[in-house]
Length: 151
Image (cartoon, rainbow, N blue to C red; front, top):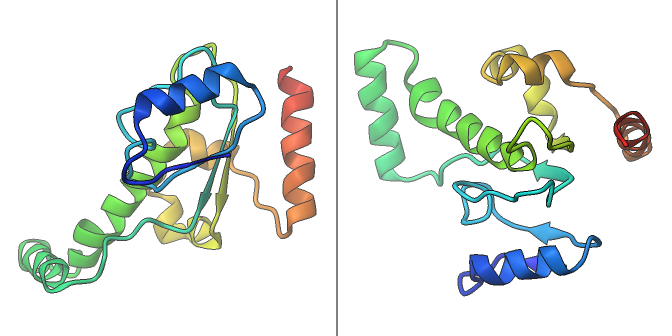
């Protein structure tokens, strides 16, 4: 088990991941392991995200929403709050597929991604391939089925 902490270094994580194929890497969406880092040679085989990585609510965030509302009436929250969260979610999920040869599954544990106003912000191939499951058993069965088809 590898847990992202402030002091965790990328090179240490890469060494641990390459030494064993039985790892779990826990990180933060928007953190150092979910954006701007590649995992070559199918080093990651599954990404599980929990929740949507919304920005911390603050005076700054409220001002940003207000600004976008003034520029695009009624769209301030989408522009300043929702869309950046979706970008961080997609970045984190994208770590598992870095080349055409990579195979991996993506699990998004947040039912909000199935809502039409959020789902349409996801890449079209996510929307096309997404399977909605209602419990952990169905999720596990879908992951097993994915690997049976892609091994």
